[in-house]
Image (cartoon, rainbow, N blue to C red; front, side):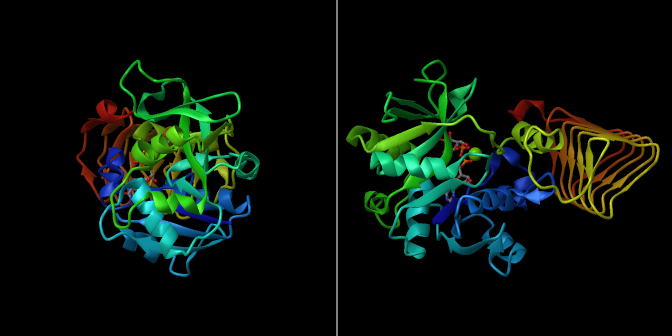
Length: 339
Ligand code: GDD
Ligand code: MG
């Protein structure tokens, strides 16, 4: 089966990291998000994928020059302008000449969904589209979906006003689609699958959904990105790791940690240096970054090559961009934009 993987968003909620690295190339427990997405799809029979790209496309092409990601052969569909989620699926699907049932997924979703079962339900209902739903406590920042007992979707509201969500089940970003999807999206038109195509399908009673509460997270905010990492470190999600866990930390090749530093619940990328007396808790430090002596890093993501000065304090889901320098004794908190 073929899959279209949407990776063209700007990743605004993960700036400044995403100013230089597209969201889906950020590593989750040492493996780029896109590889984790494609490994999961591959385990359910996906053998070809089209990456639907717009923002920083060259980064994907140079990261995977042989066109194989997570064991799946991929091709790259680069939009001339951002086409929105529906325009992007059409553009990618047409570029891959898709003419049978296919999958489309949000590239920032980490999930253990049984995709095979989702496809089976789709076929048994004769649906035009079948989407995975997951229950969440706070549905407001997602697409909120209500359906009847047979799984027919009766309402799809993208990012509803506070208090108006029709259910706690949200669009979890994995879709089984029929090629008739393409006829709903005019060529070269910017269109949203969530705001335009799915509501229209609801009206025409062709959209079905399956609630499945397997592991799921949209890693597109600072807090969720950190959680996607710590969930793997603490065993909440079981997936392959590119190194050994020591004391709850994943320390990749070439990283050097002072004997007097404390590292827990964190990932240290390749060639990271951690100085004397530094403390790193529930954080992600990307390749080549340097953490100064006695610096305190809690719930933070440090970009590749960044330099954190001695005695600095980073906390509250703060993000430090690639190669950024944080002065000695500085204090940074990302609390305001963390959720
Ligand atoms: N190619 C392309 N072009 N990709 C895009 C575009 C575009 O114009 N816009 C967004 N994307 C990609 C993003 O890179 C991401 O992988 C995916 O589409 C979803 O975009 P997000 O920006 O992450 O959307 P969201 O998280 O606010 O909401 C979406 O996901 C939720 C679940 O995680 C919606 O699908 C919600 O309905 C859903 O609940
Ligand atoms: Mg998202």
